Image 1 (tube, rainbow, N blue to C red):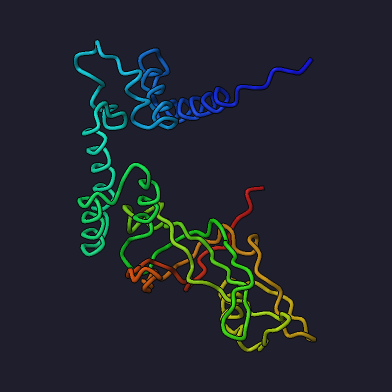
Image 2: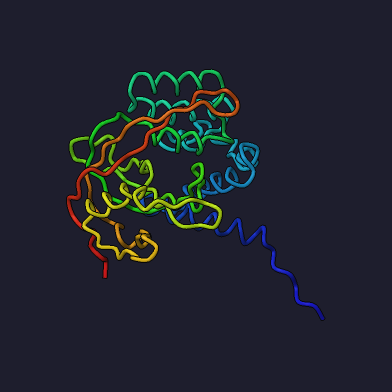
Length: 267
């Protein structure tokens, strides 16, 4: 006799409900019957979009949802649009005039939608004034075997989060390093040890000692634990290019210029 298969849809719905309830509770919301109805609207919105909300709106409630909740749980499609406006405009107001205008233009032209809202917010989060900031390294990304003509390299990109008390509105924003290039020996490609001067300079800046293979001339690669949680000063600057669709793309990158404090292990 075969076992009854689990109802994965119900399991998924339950996990979403639990996650939203925990987040709401952590922010001071009492988990009473009224607020659980609000949470249920979030659950249905996550799963089914706007149509999911309509199935559980309390039609008998003349005043609708409380003001502080209606922004998060819009009851009409026009309010959904207003919600996006509030979210995007709040983030855009933190940007420089040129970037702010680009975001607001995209919003007015309907290019920011429910489907790409999170992607848009992630993009906005990377748009902030160039300059020098205090930051912490929270991750290191690596693109392996990137070709540069007849050479090949691993490209490491530390991820910085701004922790600058002089720029409180920017605290928590993230930016990636422009790239630390580690050229290496690889069949079919040239290798010149002197090309790793940038990597050697970065190691010196971060006070990291890496062994060098005297036979191959290669320096040991960077690891996450070498730099994670390091507090640094970074210079944020712009890079731009024209993509395959002839669109002009501009984005921020960073470069570490000073090590303030080595990362402290949590245990």
